[in-house]
Length: 384
Image (cartoon, rainbow, N blue to C red; front, side):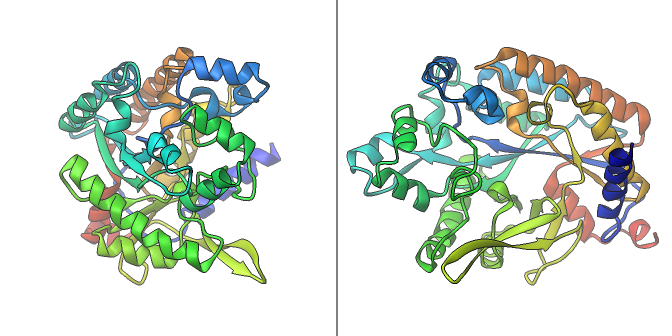
């Protein structure tokens, strides 16, 4: 009871500072689209048999590039619910635009890094050949809105160094066209997934190029500039914000806490900064912080996923804040374990139905639409 009360108090405190609105705005932000994880059920079963605890890591167990069936079923659920304006639910699909080109890296004997657009990666996966066609259909239907998540969901410098040093786990993962076999912490804390972390001035200098190339590739793939961005594992520093600004990014998604890489006496650590919805940085970019969560694949079967999300949304609306819901891609993937996708889509549909029932005046927006709306400095919002 006390634990529940504490969580309720925290969810209200998070919504105290920053921009306010009387509107019931709902944004769903979903990370990791385009990035590789577990290649297939065959590889999953093989690694499990070899003794790797891939069944205990949600990302290793269920996450994969979205198949045509995954996308079709997700879009069907999103299209089935409308807001007060008759608009379908829309997911802000935070997208990784490239993956390692394993063949070229292997040919270079791990001395050099190469990447390929995720659209190229899709063509090599079974049941994924026409996936990008589905992406475009979802975009046209207004239920799927890609934004920039990074060039790749990978710390290239540390990963390549580990491969060069013949790290046994990394080399075994590489042989299966995987980044890693675990998301468990090592020196990287997030298992090589924190793309913008750095452990030296030399590594720090490589990060602007990663962002610049990623934004350029994003526009080449989708035909428009990404106006918002979320850092992999919520790790980035202030210098990256300037690079993003130069690339046209106006809004920075995230959670309350930013992790900024730092070094002291040769030791790596994170400086922590707190953010709130509508806060501005030196470039006049706005922070959009998540205040609700729908993560059944991550939180496990013992959680009331719908109730928890609605409770967080209620706290946000009570404090006159938009509800920004985090819901990662892995919740809706079914090529490895179909029951993961099927069960979670049922939960999502029930959640969406309950949202429009409780708050019939609700309006669904994308992250960049919310950012633009905040910047209009709506008179109704200022009067609160």
